[in-house]
Length: 193
Length: 335
Image 1 (cartoon, chains in turn red, purple):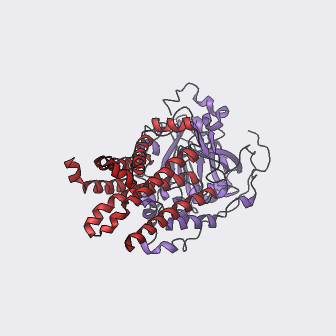
Image 2 (cartoon, each protein chain N blue to C red):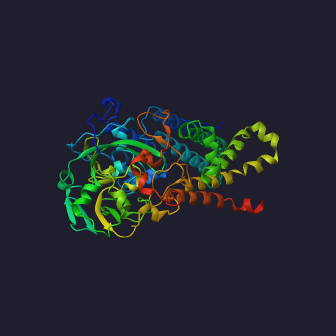
Image 3 (cartoon, chains in turn yellow, purple):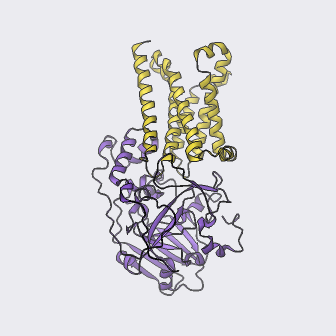
């Protein structure tokens, strides 16, 4: 492994994990404002979206600045996006719904913005469990096909965010623009398939 | 209504996090920079981009003063700690995040203040700051406060019944509704100066009640909480508290109360009529289109593992006092 790849990997681990552990520690000890549950949900949700955007920015960025070692980190960033999304869903079930399984499924089915978020999450689960190199080799061409679903996941993630806010849509709109740009950069890929 | 005298505050002082510590922790988290783009956007209007580590230095917190009041009857429910009541607010005039008001509202000028009570009444009056605090005997009311977002608090308010004030101005027979208006001052309220900060709402914020709701004994004009005058983030110097309705009805920092003949427009109803009605009575049987209203999370002390989800009660548990007001109404239609 090249030294800059290694440095970058350590950095990605350190930042993603420190932030996540810190926010849970603060939330458990009631140091995150009046409603730690809301804070944790927002933090992990926006974190997952940020990381997903970052992972989709890797390929265009690599081409643009011609630093191929960046590609070595794409999977790691994607996996952290999955971890944040997993924390988001589990926190919703454990701390917002408080383990009421019936209510959990009711909310997923009845609230369109949660349904949309759940579909995005299921895609991320599939991508995460097929991310091992061994699985990738075994799947052959089907692997790329499956992993193209990430474009749908990020789109649904953006819609989920937009739909969840009460009034101020500025921030979701900014995310929407960024996501659109990332998809636009791949327009050839969509036209070919 | 008879009020027994008793201590309202059951929490030991030590269980309440000191506010400065509380705010410092939040600032630290923000500076970690992962709170989302809003955090960055919101502070950028206040401080220069390189000012991240000193943004709070030049801000002196708002000074509240102790009030003299008759103690309220204690409620058999745990109070929400003062630090939480005063740092978790929806007051979009100061930003849309729950922590924005406490950060951006500390400089609000509440004295001098003018509250006009006018419209369909015999004796319109204008009250100044001192009159707000001295015109009526102040009483403490410990109420449940249920936000439409499905969280709730228990808050010891201090104030006087709106009915007492309305009696003074003598509403005419044409007075069927009461319209309220929040201060409009974009210089002091960044959310009014920028649609982005203010959540795209058309200001001033307006609210309304039917006259029989307005004169119900539960309906309070509050000038304080936890024994002191209101801090700006909670609606200083005077706000409405209607405990059986969703929190957005309880309009803050009021400058005008107008008696009117027709149902007045109300801010959230204008913004999303299918989500927020004029009546906005707490009702576990009528869901918000995007989330259930059947239960709520009660915010008291306790962190992430607090088992705080409780059933929501019709009229927020005040049915005995107010259900009669809606006797022949379809509350699913008039939500």
